Length: 167
Image (cartoon, rainbow, N blue to C red; front, side, top):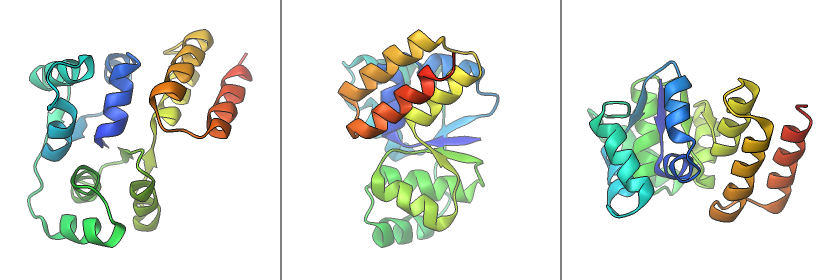
């Protein structure tokens, strides 16, 4: 099972990789209610419409926390937004194998809490390694992510080199 925070879900939707990921990923994809609100509140955007449809089609499951005790502690201790804190607390509560998160404080929280995590760039690379995207498509998606995501130039360059080395 993988729990998503809002940013990776939105970025995968905007790069048109989300449906392919959901089709290929063998486990359940789960989000907490705060992430649903973050992703779907702008109902006119492409990504919000897509994510809403995927929730309606039960390809993404919205799951509430049974207790907010861990959520509040994680939020305070790591200075996180509601969505990030809910996603991490949910991942820990349901013992998710992975959480997709982009927020720096959220990533640091996952490291300290020993919660396995990935980001969108890791997902793009893994989809390419699994043969779900051709190298040229993965490079195009990377170029788009460099424009719409918040990545340092050296991280994008490193990922580009890794994708190009996969010849």
